[in-house]
Length: 51
Image (tube, rainbow, N blue to C red; front, side, top):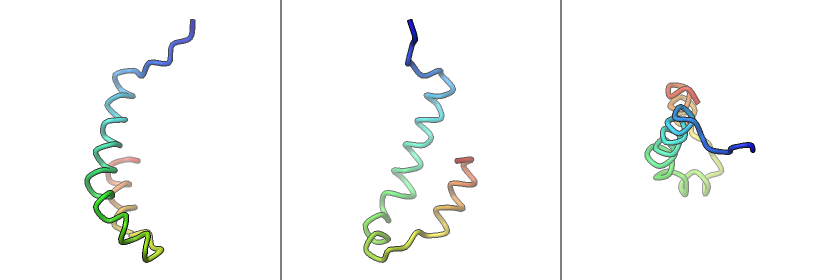
């Protein structure tokens, strides 16, 4: 039977991605959606976090 459980490494990455999306990104989403912009600082932060 094929299992679809995440490995410990995948769970760690998932948690890191969730934390990243909540902390630097979520607070600014509404503002940037209204402006139709995607801030460069988010791209830089994602790069630094290896996403």
